[in-house]
Length: 150
Image (tube, rainbow, N blue to C red; front, side, top):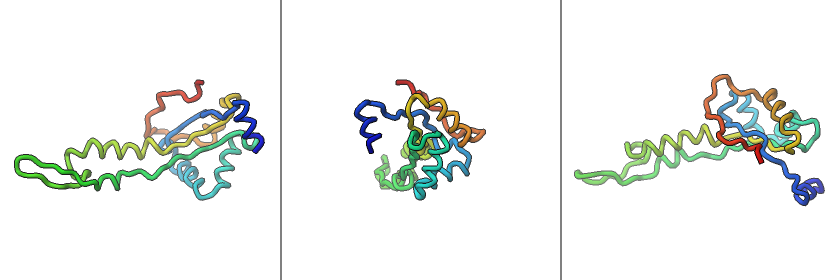
């Protein structure tokens, strides 16, 4: 607890050293990250692989429940000269662009972020790439922003 208090007091906070979409990893690596939701020891093991000093790296797996199925059932009022009808968003031509965006979020929002002291960022990135390789054919778009520039 003292370590966290001193980090806050002296502004020696962890920074994001890398962020990757879950979709960029092989299936077994993705499952390994998702298993950390139920097993804290797996999360701690992943963090320990990235640094020799315990507690110097934080791995954050982000995989919120996404709303494609639920939002696709929102009723819309559509129609024209022949009258109006109430239909679900996912079954209309007008709803296609929104449904496309909702499907895309399942590939872009779930991600893995790694935080550490900026002084060890390069070493942490190198270890991460070795321990958790990405798939050969990326199913995602590279981040446009470099989170490590402060």
